Amino acid sequence: MPGPAQRRPAAITARRFRFPRAEPEAEPEGGEGAGLPARCSAGDGGRGSRRSMAGRRAALKAIDWAAFAERVPANQRAMFNALKTRSDALSARLASLPEKPPTIDWAHYKAAIAKAGMVDEFQKKFSALKVPEPVDTQSAKIDAQEQEAAKNTAEYVQASKARIAQYEQHLQKLKSMIPFEQMTNEDMAEAFPETKLDMEKNPFWPHRPIADL
Image 1 (cartoon, one colour):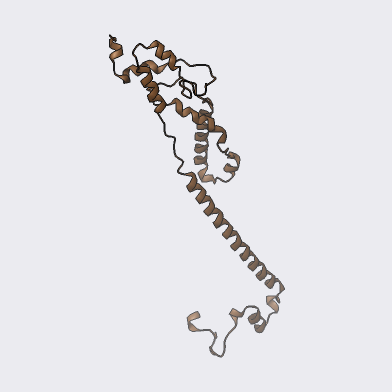
Image 2 (image 1 turned 180 degrees about the horizontal axis):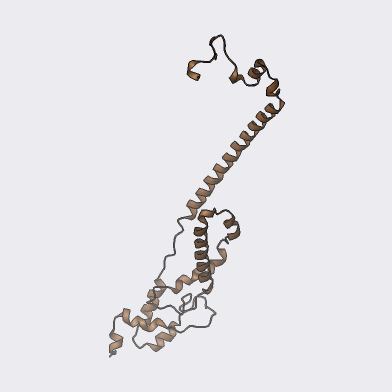
């Protein structure tokens, strides 16, 4: 007959698995409990399985914070510092995790727990547990914004070059014209056609349409 402790619900009995015994770091391929963390229990919600994310730390894109800081305006400096502090904290936390999680010694628990099938049930449920990883929903939006900004920047640069060419042409015209103090009315009208007076259409002074006065 199992004792009172053995008749407790599984959620309570699972507390016994809080401190499992870890095998050596070498992880057997396909062995019993392979790929499962030793510090994880059936009641820990699979926290140890999330440690496998640390193995992808090398694939993370490094951030050039110095180049980033050069582009941050003064009124957003506090936001930038808060972002960097948060990023550094997460990076340090990720770096503290092991590359490979240790395994659970299921054989040890099968030999230590008298209730038949209990450890097998825990091992089956633990192996079937899949912890969803956060889905990246922002990178695509950021990439689209970056492409749009690059497109707008290129268009602005082209328009600026066209304006510069126009201004340089106008400046050259101003440099090559007769000095103002030596100009006659005809010279003025030739250099600036918009100032020419139409005395035939508007015979009275100031020889301009009333609407323009």
